[in-house]
Image (cartoon, rainbow, N blue to C red; front, side, top):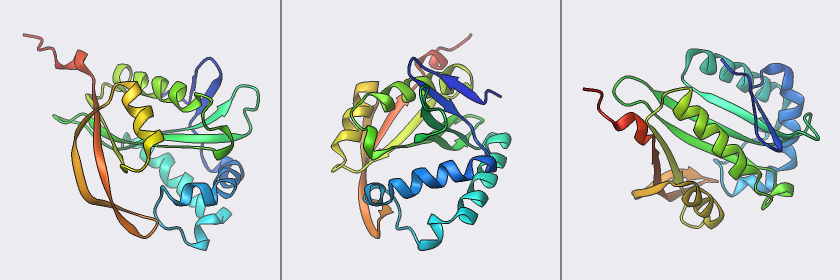
Amino acid sequence: MTNELYTERLLLKIVDESATNEVLDYVIRNKDFLAQWEIKRTDEYFTYDFHHKILADEKHKIRSGDMFKVWICTKEAPELIIGSIALNNIVRGAFQSCHLGYRIDQNVRNKGYMTEALKKVIHHAFNKMGLHRIEANIMPRNQASMKLIENLGFYQEGLALKYLKINGVWEDHIHMVMRNTDLEIDED
């Protein structure tokens, strides 16, 4: 399995428990900014032990093929995490699909980093992992995320009412999808 992917400006790397301090630094730096887009977090979430355990769990999910997750760094500062992208709930068999999650550091928004990183991860998902669908669920009020996903070629399949509990409130989400059309060609 590939542990690192590269783009023009970025390093996308799979990490394990040895990166707990770097991940925790990212999470704490972005605590207030990310709160509006994520589940309600307890104080325990912002501890070393909590993230050490999460990274260990994610390592096993990545090895088993249930998840693919990379942490984003710039090539100029490879020790500083500025975001993450995860392909979660990977289902094989007839489905060949996953859910996409991503987040970026508040201090590097609007620099094109997430677009650059997502293009690389999508390419990896379709061409190396053989996935057929990537699904992203986005709150209608998150216009920046909607614009990003639409610009990448995702299309809307519908609205899921009260789909996820975000920061303590059940939020509607727009169900966005990208398909790997190369896998849809029958090989008869």
